[in-house]
Image (cartoon, rainbow, N blue to C red; front, top):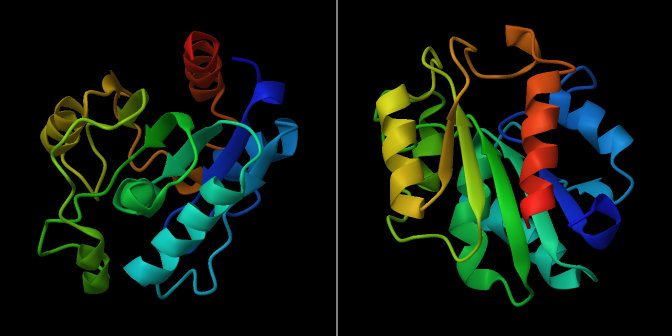
Length: 182
């Protein structure tokens, strides 16, 4: 699949992805990419967030490919039952452990627990061994349950701009490779 053949949906996590974040940079470079906007980026409500993702999928004119980060991963996975259009694949980066009672802010737990069934589309989960929001073992377990390819990003923290992942060329290459296989 090529970029022009897909509706690429960028799904940021809690507080959105700023201009230096790799998601924002990718959105600017990918001709068919658009961000799923949320009314309250700093006060996520599962029902509202999943409804926006489902709306974006159901309005898509081409097969959807997700690029989701952090709470955006949880949002996409929880929205799947509402999809009425095809999803070609998902590139999931740094999923948080939404079942961890010590996650902050605490209301992020309302986005869990993750479903344990295989996803109905191909996916990749990229995670870091020192992500403060999810132990690598939990991310590997989630990926295995979903039938996702797991990519260990090394010590990359939360794989965001604050951790130094603005351009993130390795991620760009992994996504491009994934897209060619869809």
